[in-house]
Length: 148
Image 1 (cartoon, one colour):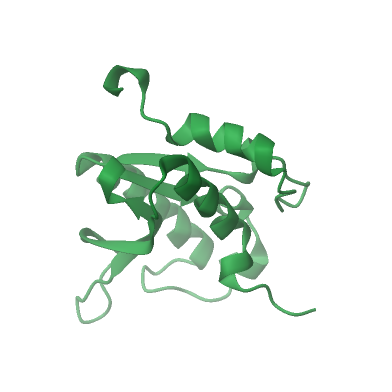
Image 2 (cartoon, rainbow, N blue to C red):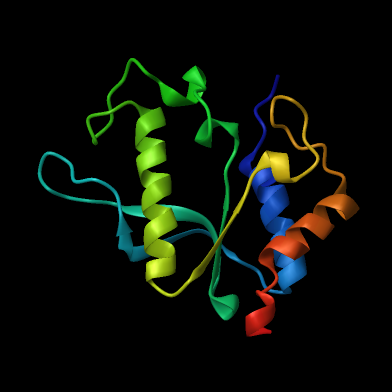
């Protein structure tokens, strides 16, 4: 089976829907100087990526697949330690929590979208019911009523 290119991934499908709703192209895999990973042995830290950032809306969207909420050995690689001294699954959780705290702390709105929010199968693969998914995405990324 051929590997699916990132532009055909569920993540990009969701981010494309966000672009459509917001009428602005988001900056995919954006980085912020203030959002950093754990230091390596020499004390260097890398900036963490976010799935997409819409500067005109002050909005960051993270599409969090199933491996963000439950163990998935293929992604977690429990036998290999990361720079943080933990396996990838735990590092992902630490970095997700860091994003959850730092993004709003820097004046940006964070919206997290998960497969369960949209039409998806049991394995978390999106069924891509575009019109239904657009309704959900629109509700999630639209500014709160107080700021409209």
